Image (cartoon, rainbow over the protein chains, first blue to last red):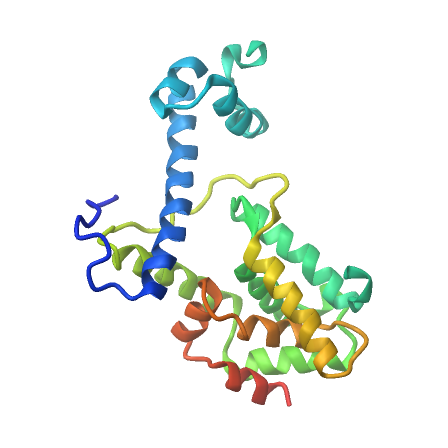
Length: 82
Length: 163
């Protein structure tokens, strides 16, 4: 779905378009994170492994995604012991 | 500030939170306020809109063709265009679940501040949905002005439609 990012970073792009793109990319990255964390949990990944993959602490990833996934009825395994 | 809101404007704020939550947004943004305005205008009976001021907002939105469907379509194309501008091809994936409690985002906070300013400038006491629509049209950057441009609606169009 996602294509390669431009390497000519600001090349010719108007600030209104460029700054808007920054916000859209953040939103897009957040959505990607949500989807892939859910996918990983469904495939039985541990929070520790997901945290390592995302380069954040286990506490951070669990705090961010644990409640949402549990609310969606997804078994998050050992999450309660984190 | 919310204590100065008309009943419909209060319901609108709650509606914006609901829309943001249902869309899976982490924060309530100005575009959710715009969507809430369109939803209220399209289904006035469920939102208890009986005041003349709210009628004016509904009429203006209808006149300008600002419907929820039109705004959502414009939001989707604006998002894709925004990423395309920096060489990323992606669409906004529809969220499969809502978030329980999105917080007020900066663009919505700014819109609410501007709403108060519009109300004060016009010498009105009560903040109603007309003021909010005007305030949204005053945004200088961000999603809402870009979406309004996509819809081919200018701030002066909105101002004229409300008169």
